[in-house]
Image (cartoon, rainbow, N blue to C red; front, top):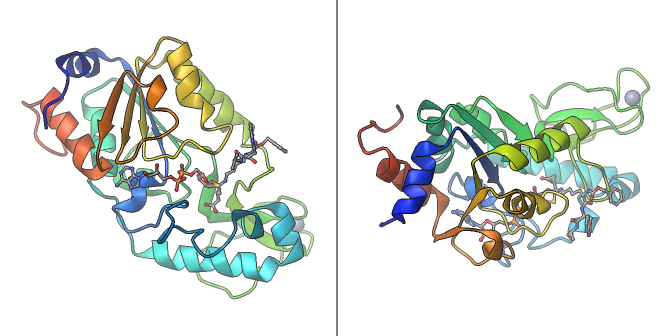
Length: 250
Ligand code: BJW
Ligand code: ZN
């Protein structure tokens, strides 16, 4: 694959790179994305029946079972070449910040050291009633466990529709988007706000936005460079093209 020489120069000269990721980055690890018509996590459900506080209030058992099913799916998955290449950027660029919408923890597993989780982490739990952290999800249970403090039901540690994003994570993501020299936007449909506003914001602050996705998205218009294809192929290729002298994984 041939890349624009301006893009390669920009990467080599960057002091700080932001990498904004969505479900597409984990697709090649075997985790279904959300919105693909046949195979997506919501192919047979409506998001509002599973990923809202109202859904949990109405039917905590179904919501909990859906998250336990997803945790089972994720227990065996490994980071793919896209996660690994993003982590390897840290050997080439002084500062790399991953801003992820994903809840699977795979950027950490791949070795990225500065990861902002905008939508939480599926392996954490907290009390739906008093918000005290619960036991992390080590072993599966069919029903939501009870909170040790107040007896309320424990829920997964993710951000549902209608809930605010964790304030420290959101403020830091905005700050990084404002200042990073290069802003990658990888594997997200860019439909969910407020996260989807970050590429727009980075572009309005004069940052170089690079979009990587096999499909067209709403944010292609904000990108200086649109690279069409799978993240697991394009991200490692891009690193090899920008830093040909450095070995893979180093
Ligand atoms: C590949 C690939 C490969 C495939 N390589 N690419 C206007 C302004 C502000 C807010 C709103 C608004 N209108 C509505 C709202 C509210 C709402 C919202 O955005 N709704 C939209 C549906 C319109 N937002 C919220 O409620 C947020 N909170 C909020 O706004 O707080 C303020 C507030 C408070 C009180 C009242 C009202 C407002 C919270 C949003 C939380 C989202 N949570 C979820 C679930 C997390 C838990 C869980 O995992 O179960 O987060 S929803 C789901 O979507 C998940 C994802 O992180 C998120 C984004 O999805 P993503 O990653 O983009 O995945 P897909 O499947 O959509 O796309 C995959 C992409 O990958 C595709 O493009 C493929 O082509 C590509 N791909 N293979 C590279 N190999
Ligand atoms: Zn509690």
